[in-house]
Amino acid sequence: MAKIRKFAELNIRKIVGGKDPVRVVEDFIERRGFEPSKCLKEKDLDQTRWMIRIKDEEELEILIESARKPQETTIYMGVNIITVPIRGAQEVITAALEIADGLVGIKVSLVGHYLVLSASMSAQGVTIEDLDYNFRLIEAQQTWFRDALATELQWDQFPMD
Image (cartoon, rainbow, N blue to C red; front, side):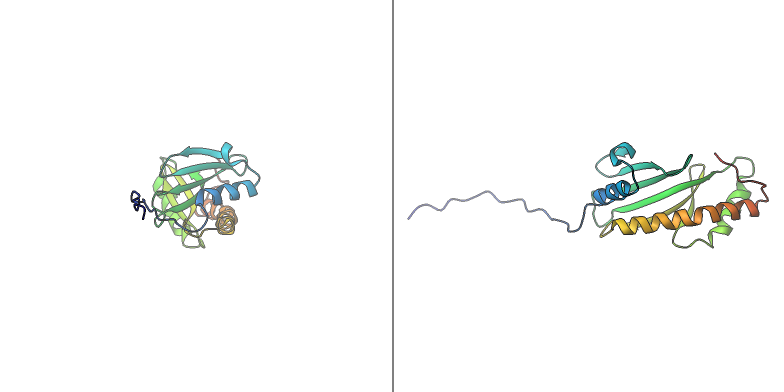
């Protein structure tokens, strides 16, 4: 009988099911009529960021974070609403927080010196429809939030950046 040959131990890796979140976001971007590679702003092993111009001066940021840990990977999408002025910052932030109680499915945050309407979700099992739904939530409430903020602050018109 022939000798039995021993093989080196195999490195068995865990294969995570489902669709790659980067691919889902790229499909979402394509569905909106943009080229993902042109919208890509940053990519490394742990995060990927796209900026999509949705109106004249408005951009939608989509960010995938913690990509190396599939159980912790999140997708963030947000739109800047207003640059918070240095003079009167307290009034603007206070008014925004009071109005935020009326938001459904999204949140308002202070990111740097911007007020941002955003949605965050787990990347596990996320679909294009989930991304589209969250984007439509932001889009639908954006005008309402701006109008409510301008009314609360007694502005004649909403300042555009």
